[in-house]
Image (cartoon, rainbow, N blue to C red; front, top):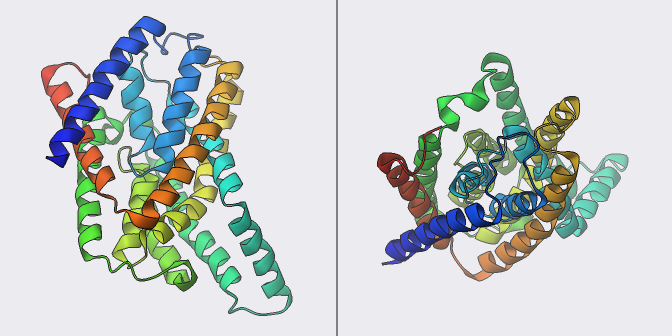
Length: 312
């Protein structure tokens, strides 16, 4: 019954988006200089919300504009507006970040290498290495990865469904007995390896890391908290790399004003989403995201089969 409700709800979203998109802004994004302020605000909202909950922002930023009849905004724009989410993560977790940073610095000065703050900083650093390493490998050996089958619409649907099933297993077998203070360096490495899966659109960076955290016995809110902290270096690096691409192109296909609007919109909605998720996971499980991911993936596959959605 829950899956049926999620499926119907997702279908209604797709139908509504298409009508709204065509009536409010009929011009496709793929036509240069056609990314409007309205489109940038909506895409920033999509980025902000879906980056911070385990449903995949990359997938939604590819599927939703198509459902709206706008076309694909492009990988560079998608990555750059993630910088808005970074601002919100820093804003929300400012106390954690300052405590870890200054605590680690003090520990190094005093040679206290068993300090929890130093261990946390090392965990984040080591956990970031896998996704940077594999991301560079992809850049070098698969230069056309952005147009590969792994980024196709059908791949997004399949990834969404598979991650939903993995999250089911994590919910079932995870002990959820370990809080933030019990995190160690090994946890950072394991969750960092899980983060590598996020290189595939549809997986979700927060989805893979929260799932990984649940598998190793973390509380849901602890898994989410560490997921956000771990994501800071990776998302920032990806955003800055693609920002350079847009700067080199002079924002030609997107526009500077639209890009800044998208980033600002992402800041606002990311903060709202983070605040909601952290409160939600204090008392609730992740089944709402499981049902949504299943419905999202299946609906995309149905759309492809019926010809409503193009498998690009």
